[in-house]
Image (cartoon, rainbow, N blue to C red; front, side):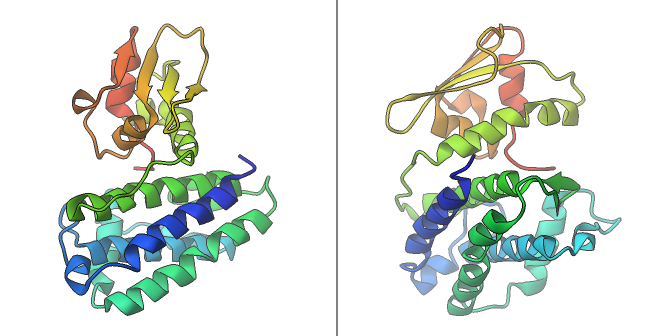
Length: 245
């Protein structure tokens, strides 16, 4: 995890290269996030990066939820709806200011400290990982409908780690008893990444990019080439998520 902060900045730079080249029509194009345009997606990323800064500054109360909003997605949708009247140039500048301040700020924070995020607290390294996972997923939302390339990189190892690490949370969220699962994933360069106990009877194998897309709820397990063997692997794929509910 020691290189997560540099990888987070690299992910932002890859997305920035895409956003900087968008035309006005592409900014207003529907994204893969249902009901959101490309501009809405970038606004959401800017807003959540600003929440990282607020958390670093100790403003824990920003994550208090409206009683009428039952989930994080509803809270995010409300924030976007309230601020979507913004030009692409201003939006890109806003996202850049918030995003590129995050990696060095998190890296400078005491590594064993805890930062408020959504309904709990995370270490700076884990919060950086969640930001990488969210930006990677939303980069897919931007680029896929526009037919733009967004190459998979070794940075996916952080997202795959997060998906596996939070499987107990995902099982519990679905009302199920957490179960051990071993993941053997093929990296973008053809190497192999292992997560979990190799002795587990439940095993997930296949491309790391697909594992991360399933965890981001951008790809259904049945539409992937991932293989689930053993008593709990298929259920693990069904509940897998790289983000908080």
